[in-house]
Length: 314
Length: 314
Image 1 (tube, rainbow over the protein chains, first blue to last red):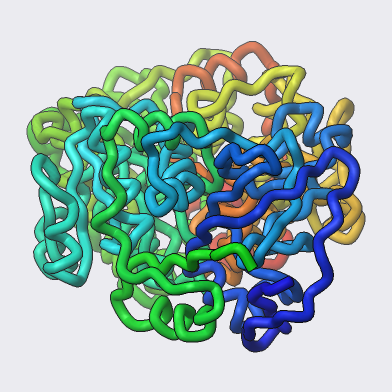
Image 2 (spheres, chains in turn green, cyan):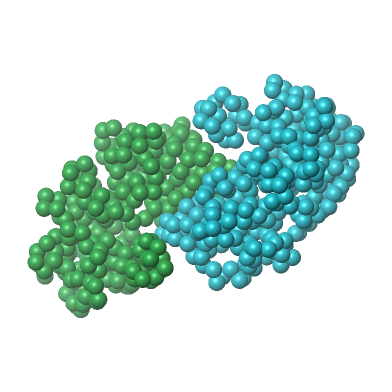
């Protein structure tokens, strides 16, 4: 079959890949659409040393034609971490298209049955590709109590920053999106304050919660400047290399820094189904799987919106 | 009067200092004993650019002979931060012997009346010097729920590490003290597990809570290795320079990092009064104020225990 194969230093579309074979508890899905994520771009450059088929944001179809999305952590279910309810942190896990398990940029993909979520009929394929990153944005609402009493800043006007902004706004929190690009800041929509990085200089110690979605080594330092004493910083993105930050404000201002990763698919699906969140403005381009290499170049362009790959029956 | 004066690059005992004059809300205390803290050693080397009299861990005496300790943050009481109950984070604050306010390594010192706590009769002067750092250790118990269900590691077998170990043990938490020095690890006492840094290699992802009391740039990296997914790291010490740590495990393992600074004096005083905590094994040497320079050298020696300065009526 066809698939976007990462060899640890680059990607290419291969047509000679073996058909995936479901292991115990897995099901085989035909892929309909799959998104190119910043993580895919990093993996293509060697991040985590992954070799295999990329792709972890996707819409698949079961053998009886039901459209589904799938959570990406394939955990063992039996180790102490899993038994403690922390399945997404299972030390024995594979991660779809990221760690030890082929992903969904292919004609077909296998995923654990327990990871599958049905997509409601009137959530289109393109929107449904965002279920995974939108769930990651909803993770913040599981970790923090957000409501109208909370002044919250989102750092980074990229796709994840936008999703986090919209999710935070649903909670009633007073949200300010801070970024570098006026055109992207404008996507935040009504009810959200926006500020450029330069304008944010005036907002030191202003926010109860700051979510760093920059993927930049300087994001944490900015967050430490913006958060109030005893406030909370949420780290949503990993960065290549060490953060360029003096961490002493964490101690001096008794700041809480929380890592935040994968989140609840049902909440993301419900928000798309109800129309509470419309992700379509985030879509930049759609390519066919056969043009995957071109799609990766497009996704890697500065300021690119989400790039999708449509997988026609191959 | 006499006082240990920091000029931003070194300290010396001066005998020509003006008598301190209480400002509004302050009271004048005669100093009985004052401790040399690692922060004092850093201030003497230029940390925070402090100029003035050092000393923030002390026992003073009021004009009618009542022995007292004093909290170190002198806040304005009227700004939004203070009104929100976060007085120790007041942006207008001075800090005794650390920031904009002369400290207690002197014959006399002024402190805000609201910061003063009476020392019970049978808590000796030498033990009472530890009220301030012991309160800082108790701060952890205000920030986290610690009990017998919690496996907790304390990193660093110095004075603050020991105080945190003893405080954590009082909560019922299962405590492991991890450090470099067998003689200091042995101070932890019965009921506390001890491990050298090397032995701790086998304890990756083992602890619900890890408190970094090392004051070292590598402490956070070690803590990130020892803490379990979704566990908590408490940063008790600032370090000179940036931490040498890849922070991506914070995100990947959804770790919570909490800064922790000054704490509740009443809890520290109660623990000393009841005998629940005996700090005297931590005392290394006692000097007279006149020998302050020698005392600083002694405190700066590798592995030094707490050095105290006794202030005879001058």
